[in-house]
Image 1 (cartoon, rainbow, N blue to C red):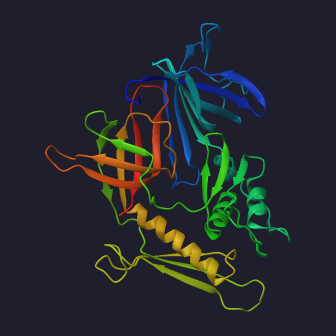
Image 2: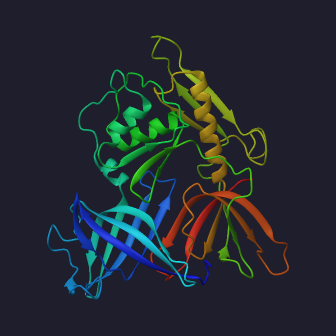
Image 3: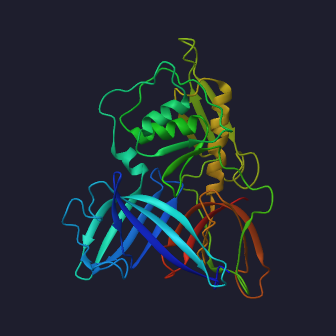
Length: 362
């Protein structure tokens, strides 16, 4: 089905605030999502310099000379959807790929190159110009929503237990403050294809066989598999620190999480590579321990990353559990690995293959 049973089309709508500016024709393009970036989504689009979206519309010049042009970088947001049509008569369905603020436009003689960033770009750009402190009755959830503001919707997973936000002052970076809240909670932030910021519990390793299974060989969808192993920013000890704001003068809280097993264990030949995280949002030893353990798990997963090139798969999202079965060389024993999706790049048309980076659980 994935390799030959459907057609892919793309719909790109341009919006300026609540005003619909029209659809945009697409020659080619791709969308990338990366959970290691603060602004997780990016868009690359190639538009014909002169063309029409459909047979029912007149041709026009897509050089954005007018501030209200669909491709002008004056706050225009592109809403991108992929439309999958079954060749077997099973209908069609539409998948939201993302909402992207246009950040740059490069008109050429025959095409226009458009680049965009997901909506957290607005949170990154809007730095705080005056000191801002949490409200007296503020919680982690209410402060996160206040910092994100009207730039995007926020959905907080019901499994996350909200708590009081202590007295402090946020720094100038609005997006840094949002991520500090998430790390201290602990939680993870994920931008959805619908333009909503999802605040979820920390990502965990799969304990049962993942529903997404990628394989090569006959009837497989994998085109190529490689792997990369690194020590860069891969820590096996995390120190999380905070302080008790209820008791002035109380000592700072500190918790240490060590990797206890495997090749990265503390005390083994890997050595000790610590990471430090400190925040006044951590007000108890228990909170410090949870933050340290979450950061350690994220770091250890990052050590072995497997980039996979495969047929486009609309079910793949950040943090999705994946099983990879591959035969690296002829006559070798097939190898099966479980992991979670760290990043992926998907073509907007059927010109090209999807690239997915999987953090393998060792």
